[in-house]
Image (cartoon, rainbow, N blue to C red; front, side, top):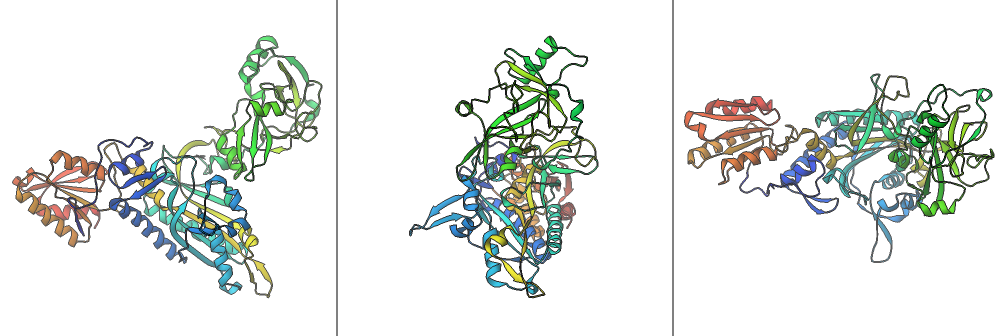
Length: 590
């Protein structure tokens, strides 16, 4: 097909949108693919719709090829199914809630586990009906606290979500692998540089969980990988704890006055100055304790103290991921007033008298969890719960016993991989897909059971699989654009070829029309810039719009040549007019 730019509903912008934080957001708006309606809400314009539909087409083809069947459920949903699974509460403020004219509670669907489950329950009752995989491509809604980066993190977005239903765990494993393989084909076709990493299930629940991340320096997700093949979202990294030590070999606990030393670095400096030892005191010998308030979806709260080596910090995203859908916030002054036993800068699991203040053996109601590196027999310098006092030789398993282990410390370049496959390296990525083995959580809650081959009712086991369709448009833009504009791969471009008719001579426009017609006959989609605009404007728009092949018909026509440009590589070549179509077809691989 041929589209003339003079009639296309598009306007390019010369300035960046004021809220643009990443290149994909900047260029998709400036090139006229999307327009902002409200924070996190965007309109898709003709060029953007073409790319979005091509991504949808790839996703749909691969889902159908793996045997899944397409459905379409409403976005406006009743409260009751989500109440049954507790997600009406668990989703917290991320859920768009509303009432209909009769006062019934409704919501805009963030995901559709409940509706898929109830639909299968309504229609199937035998193991002979399974396995089954259903999918939809549909608009979802989440009231993001910080919508950003254009359509990368919006409050309204297009997603493919699919669900598998199996009679047993072996069936779930097979369905999970089939979806995983389909995702590999999808992201290969999208041309993304991606990694598959272990991930947290979060509010979705379930066991096995993996993410497909497009590698991008501006990505919101941090992941790690090792030379030996370990890969995980940083939130899912689990530290391999050191071996436990003998309590009998631990030093005695000693009270040390540490005037005005209320930070790790101050304590280290003070000890090295006033209490030197054969090896200098270091931050990793300190037991840092940080106080948080845990707020559950129902509004109830609980104090939480996290203990970790003093050379580490708590990673806020890792902490949030562990407790999702609850939220976690640091103690403020009012919280410390409620718990006077905790002294800012001098917190620890025991006091100067050796009495447990935190942990299982303490009288306080404060939950105390520690990093996996804090093992039985390890001894530490930590606060004595008295201003200007610390304790040395505080030993895990002798002097205190925590309420649990919590792996939420920051992960750093060079940390050893948990599987022993070498040092981990940090990188950034954009989450493009997430697959879960949900198990029986939703089937149990909603009563999805079928008769097995023995005539016995058994609970169906499920998997959940998502692809961010609208996010994929931004991810491809993010990873292919340059400092001049968008740069689409051939399979996703709105048009494979853009022809620029530059100049005022009628012969230029006639030849541009002729080349466009022949390319269209060969099956290529062509955008013809037939506007009465200057060559400079057309060249700039040609680069910002990002079609993979650009043909310039202009002053060279007098010498019998046109210019063919490869937008991705920047390569340019002059070819004879008679060879223009074949040169473009060769570049397009047609």
